[in-house]
Each structure stands twice: as C-alpha cells, then as structure tokens.
Image (cartoon, rainbow, N blue to C red; front, side, top):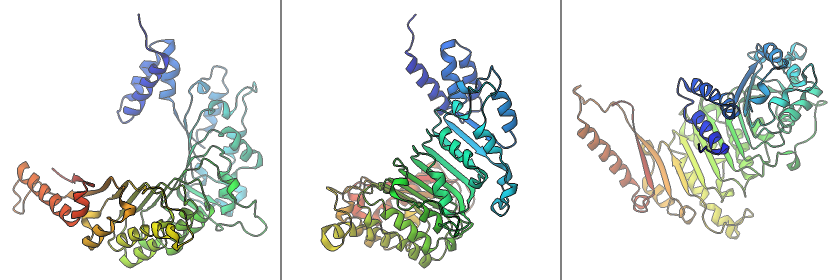
Length: 435
C-alpha cells in the first residue's frame, strides 16, 4: 500500500496542532494519532508536547519524573519552554537577595543520576522561551553559564513581570542567548536605571555584544517606572528590523524622555528598520501625545516598509508622516543621514483609527502624495458601526438598511482622501459590534 513520505506526515500533524489549538479536543486527536503506528509516535508527541510549562511548585515532580530510566521527556522535541518563578512575584526580591529562591538554579544545574541527561537534553531544539517574574539575581555564576548552555538554540524570548538590578544586568542576560532573534519585554523594570550602581558595574554594552540575529524588539506595558532606561539598555541595535511599542496606560506615562530613547534606538537601525508598530490605547492631552511623537524621527529610517499606528489622537498623525518626507531631503545633501534608497520602500500604512480622527484631511491627502509614499500599496484602517441593528425607535433594521449605512459611511470616508482613493490604495475594514 502506498504511503506518504515521512516529511509530509510530520507537516500534516503539525498543521493539525496549529489549526486546532483553539479546538477543545485537539490534544485528544493528537493522542490518538500517537497510537496509530510506531512511525507516527515521534511526530505526534512533538506536536502534542511542543510547549513545556514549569514553575517553582512543579519543579520537584518534574525532576523526579525526568530522572526515571523510562522517561520520555527527551523524546518530545519541545520547541517552547515557559518558566514562572513564583516566589519572585509581588515582592521586591532585590531588597533581600538572601531570600531569593534557588529553584531555577537547581533546574539548570540538575543532572540525572546516571549522568546522561540534563535540561539541555530535553530542550536541545527549543526555539521559544517565556520567563515570568524572573529574577536574574537569583542565579549564581554557574546557573548563568548553564542558562547560556541549555538555551543556545533560543530564537524568541519573552520576559514579563521581571525586574533587573540595572541595564548592565539586562544586557548580560540578553547576551546569554547567542541565537536570539526576537525579544519581547512586557512590564520589565530596571531598579537602578540603565547603569549598575557604582561598584557593581559589569562589562559595557557594545555592537559586538548584541546578538547578531536580533531583528525584532517588542516593548509593552512599561508602566511601573519611566521605562527610558530599558530602551537605553537596548541601544544601539544596528540589526533591528521590526520594532513594536505598546502603551496601554495613562498617556502621562508616555514621556518625552521615553520616546526620545525610542527615537535613538530606531536611529541606530537606520539602514535595517523595516517595520514600526506603535499602540497607545488611553487617550490623553493631544499636545502631550504630539510632543511625545515629535521625538521619533522616522526620516532617519528611509527603508521602512510597513508602519502600524493604533493611536487615538488626531494631533500627532500629520506631523509624524510629514517628518518621514524629510528622508529624501536629508539624503539629497541637506543632512548627514542615510543615503536615499534606490526607490521608495514604504508599501503598507496601517492607521487603525483613521476614520475617527479630527484632522485636516486635505493636508493628509497631499502629504501622502509625496514621492516617499509613491510605493504605497495599501492604507489600511477600520470603520466600526455600533448598535446598527436597531433604529432610534428601537425597531429592528433590515440588512438592506444596514448595508446602505455602511456603504454611505465608507463612501464618505473615501471622499475625504480623493487622491489616495484614486490610486486604489485605501483599504477599509468594516467591523460590527452587534448584528
């Protein structure tokens, strides 16, 4: 009987994992697949156990099972490892380093009783890692070395709810992952600023120290402190291609010093930056948001291909885009910045709240006709229609009436940007809160 090549069987099982991860019984399906035949065991287990989650409370049980001669952890081919250091949560562990738990040290330095297995045996192909409430200071020297040895294959790293003593400590931690390509910092705080206290400074940060594959940085929920020091600790990053900044709190936390640091980080990637994403959820003073964005000069990044803006403010948008048009001016000899690209690179501009903004539409339309925007293939935005299923009298509307209202709303919006509309680059996504 003809059979599928092993590579295709593996791809099918991985597709089952990816497409069914939101389906309640996907793990049961993969469990059944693992019992079909011997050839399917390895691929099914890899799909079923690709994600391994560990915390301080489960370490003892895990090590006991892993030390058993018949253990199968090492056969699972774990691609994602998650660890949460419970005891660090909700306490300032840096004030009392002697009370720091050594559970992660124990895991990193553990070896099986026969001396043949350690953590790196199980995680040899792991590409993604998440660490929650993690304390870099809780690791001793050997633990830090073992972290680099066990996770040498890590390409995507996320930290959340984590505090470092200083920027030097954060940099030292990042350097543990030589293959790192993507770094996601969620609510990460430096207790002593970007530099370590006098007497505790370690090696300085230089171009050679940055993982050469680091192409993506995501900064999120920098709320507990100013956050400027975290950005400064990541600068310069000349290999950066994708940068995302998400601010979900009071706009007062969006300080000029923080956005200035972000601007310097982006400027350090003048030749390489291709995608910029900025999200500001909470609306504040228009002038404050405009001042904060003024510190980000994207004219220094003429090779940008995609810009995503989700900011509920009207004042910042046009000046922000107009500064991008200066890229050509500077490249033509009026500034000492990066050279003009052979042709405009910006292909996609996503402005989520564009239809709701109160701006000078003619000025925006004219700005988007600048040569730097000539390669635009799409300007994406969203139009939301709320409670459109009933009229003012409470009677149910027909689908035809709803469709007519949507058509008119989209048509009126397109009329605000006639030049962009004539180029066929306006892409409007219609969303309904209720039908």
